[in-house]
Amino acid sequence: MTETPTRLLVAASGTGGHLFPAIATADSLSDYHIEWLGVPDRLETQLVPQKYPIHTIAVGGFQGKPGLGTLMTGTRLATAILKARHLLKQGNFQGVFTTGGYIAAPAILAARSLRLPIILHESNALPGKVTRWLAPRCTQVAIGFAVAARYLPKAQTTVVGTPVRADFTNESEPLEFPIPDHAPLVVVLGGSQGAVAVNRLVRAAAPAWLEAGIWIVHLTGNLDPDAHSLQHPHYIAMPFYDHIAPLLKRANFAVSRAGAGTLTELAITKTPAILIPYPYAAENHQTFNAKVFAQQGAAVLIQQQDLTPEQLQGKVLYLLGDSTELNRMAEAAGSLAVVDSANRLAEVVRAVVV
Ligand SMILES: CC(=O)N[C@H]1[C@@H](OP(=O)(O)OP(=O)(O)OC[C@H]2O[C@@H](n3ccc(=O)[nH]c3=O)[C@H](O)[C@@H]2O)O[C@H](CO)[C@@H](O)[C@@H]1O
Image: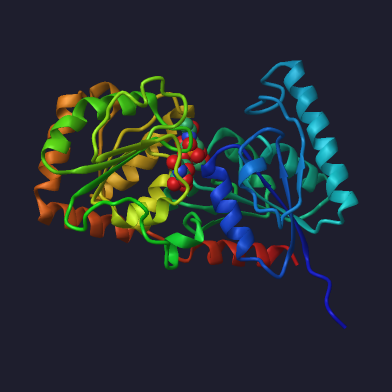
């Protein structure tokens, strides 16, 4: 007799930072029957592999605790909880795994009302408001950075790192750009949406880097009106690129925002970086992420308002010229990596959703 697979609902929505860890974990649970819960018109409708049937619930823009927001917010949340509850019952799901995003609150509250086990993964050093509010209601809270446990005193926390796409830890495809082996490569990343302010700083600093023989791959996001203003044969700009693993494995240096997803990847590929936290991120949480890397010596943390193009230009040239320092930073980055994170997180799921 063949056993019926355990049925798990994965609720992950919105940004690459929420979706990639959830997909990597789902892929480590191949003996489970997994379906997805997301929001219409968000990135999940493009990124989630077809093998996971996807359900969507419109949740609107609520954040934080209901009751603190408007009546509208409470009504939207209540409607979303009812829909999630209906889906969990109809689909006979045995548990919920969520990485946060708007869909997390209704999914957790619906599962809780049905007494189903819930695993929440939080990748940031400073957990978001929804995580802090709901963590005590989850069976297990898996965290990316140990320091996050400090903000979740009433939750059952386990440090698992943050899962990355499989080609970071396995063999990845060869790099598809014609960058000579000996040329230094700087990669510029602004999170899954790009970062216009970082792009401007980089374009102003880039001519001196190019002059010094550096190649640049610049992932601009698609909101930058000046994305095509710099042209040079060694400067490759595009709004979004799918194969980040081979790119970061090859990169000598990165200039980046400090989203948890990108930082995890920089650690795994041992890429030294200048980190410029997104100044408007909720509760400035990217600075908390960046501090973990800066305190380890893996990166240089510079706030956007303190950074001029001249400083950025000089800092990158200086570091690329100091191979001892660069190697030390690379080793420090590597010491922060949790290479088997997807398996660790899958084990946490297996322990409670049976
Ligand atoms: C602005 C904001 O609040 N961002 C938050 C959002 O990050 P957001 O998703 O924007 O950024 P992250 O750094 O966490 O993740 C970005 C992901 O997109 C990938 N990528 C990026 C560009 C590209 O061209 N191709 C590509 O594949 C990166 O490799 C990475 O895997 O969620 C993260 C996890 O909760 C938080 O830490 C971030 O602070």
